[in-house]
Length: 285
Image (spheres, rainbow, N blue to C red):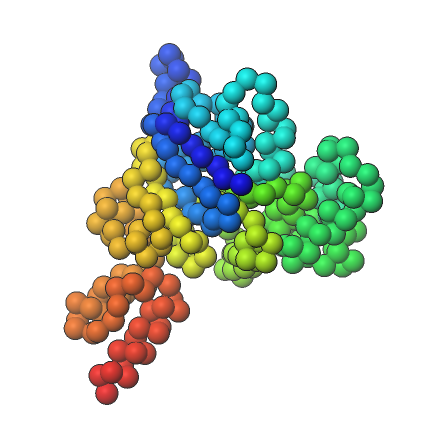
């Protein structure tokens, strides 16, 4: 299942004193099985574009084609599209409201009119997918959990709808380092073990470098860079010009190269930088 966006433009509050061009003639494609990170400074259009992908926002101009269906066409049931494209908002744990974790995760599947047996299976499956043991957590209140665990419950609630594509808007925002690492591991697991297409919106260059397979950079409502992390993070000057940066280890590698160390400029994760430094030390013995 692919998501194809063609010449998408979105204007907030058109023909008013507060008119704002949020997306400017954007075209892109997310292919089945992709793991794509969307990065950009605040106001670049990231949140606006993901809300078009499952029909929460309607374009001012352009098309959004999901699984071969133009969701901007008349008569398209957007509820069907939202079953295929799940969206987890930033600070998703604020949307938790039921007395138990099991009931909270079951809320979406119940609204699909599924049988009790199917709902129960979906709850169990989605909890397993985010690393929450069903028998241990099912009767707990979501409000007793840590921040990272609450966020996993919120993600499970979306996964229980069984989308083919999962969009996550800043899923690690506000979490401590352990909570952040746990969430990133679960997102990787959803992609690798369960074959979900992942679209990750993030401000963290380190997170993006660690887990994304492709990166799209947005600025003033346009996609200005796209490619693999290696290709995108080589464009240091371009990224800095639009108010972003690259992973800290990339700056470290650049500084080492300037000092004469023979290390590859393709290192953009801690693990890659470690390997390059060790290799250089061995060669210089």
